[in-house]
Length: 328
Image (tube, rainbow, N blue to C red; front, side, top):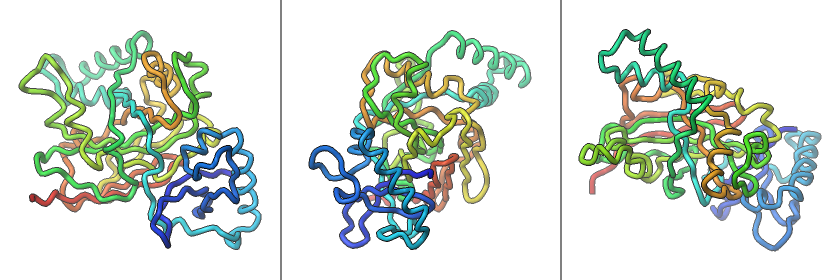
């Protein structure tokens, strides 16, 4: 039976709890129903650290619930719970320009007059094919302090009107990975979650220091700029991470609708390349890039009152409402 892991607020104490989610029901995990080495409280991080011991127990609990149905004792209704940020990674590695169609669309949008749209598309497509065969991913670092839950309101900072959405799949590292080969990389992935990588477009490039290039710190790390979750789906339930559908709707209108098959570098390649320079640690996130259809593509940035609904195959639903920052 397929199941996932979530972090939620206890309905009574409001404390953060970790739960086993299956078919819209959640079983709070405790030392009584999930025996793990050590005396630390149960969290998704401890489950990752002790997956070999946790997996058969979670399989058993999910199986028991499937047999008992809605009458399973101790299970809660997911719809009635306040979902929190699922986990707190030590490192967040983000991949940029990793969807072929997205990069081609950007090349057309920023055309310099050199050729027709079709010629630019063909030229850029050839460049992307060469990059996939001979190049390396483009990575930058995100900050865990920018993370928010899948249902928290997004406060749009008053210093800009160019805040944009970028829904994407994130791989959750399960065990230390350092200089792993692509063919071994997925063995180091615990599971997958969903992230909306909010970006302030006008801050991406430094106009005062063009030689420096991208300023990802300022453009991507404001509070709440990484809505994450609602759940973490163990990798064993994802048959092929290159066959997931990524969909984002803005006020009910579909803006992003793409398959992860369009990635230039696969999840396995991303994990391998990211581990080449630095050890990846259990619980770390590898963001895999966002497909075409962000606000820059549509010429429409986020506004007060907007509602973003994000869905990725097997990873649940994000529902994030936007509100303008109230000036102090």
